[in-house]
Length: 303
Image (cartoon, rainbow, N blue to C red; front, side, top):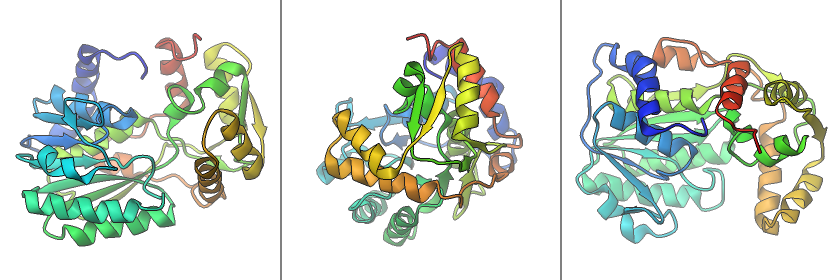
C-alpha cells in the first residue's frame, strides 16, 4: 500500500499476517533481525510487520541509521553484529552481473557473525538469480536459509516503475500476450516474516504467485477500472523498451539489462500459479482485483 502508517500496518498485520504466522505450531519471536534494503518496497513492509510482532528490527539502507550498502562490504559486519536473522533483498536484482559474488561475500560475513537464519528474496524463473542463491547457500552452510522466489509485483503498478505509465494511461511494456500471476507484496512480506520468525522453513524454496494469471492487457483493464481512468496496454519489443527507459534517464547498460530480463521472465514459463502462499500462511494469495481496489482506495492513482 502506498500510504500505510505504522499504526495501520500494525492493525492490518495483527488481523492477517500475524494471525497466519503465529497460529502455526512452532512459531516463535526471534532476536534482532537485520532487514537489508530496509526502506525499499519489500524491506519496509517486512520491517513494519516484524515491529508489529515485537521483534527487534535493524533496517539497513545506504542513508539510514544502520548503514548498509550492497556496493560497500565494509559496513556489513557492523550491521550484522548481534543479529539472529536477516532478510536479504539484493539491489538492484539478484540476476545482475556481480550478484553471485555479493551473495558469497555476504554469506561469509553472515556466517562469521553467528547469524542463525536468512530469508533471501529471489526472482521466479531467473536462471542467474538461482546462481546467486547457490553462492549464498555455499558460503553460509551452517546458516538456515529460506529462498522466496517472487512473481512480478502487483505494486509495480502503484508505487514502482510502472506507476507513471498507469497515470499516463498507456502501459508500455515488452510482455506481448504472456500471462503473469502478479503477486501482492503484502503477501510476500507475510511469507518472509513467517519464515524469519517460525520454524520449519530452513532449506525451503517458495515460489510465490498470485492466485490468477493475467495478461498485461487484462491487467491494464483492471487498473483502469480501479483508477477511474482509461489505461491501455501498449506491447513493445525489448529493444524499443530499452529506448523508452533511456529516455527516462536510465543508463544504456541498465536499460539493456532490464529489457533482456523482462524478455526472459515473460516468455510464458512463469505463467502458472502456485499455492505456496497458502502453504506458508494457511490462506490464499490476494487477488489482483483486490489489490487494484485497495491501491485506488489508498490514493495510488490520484496524480
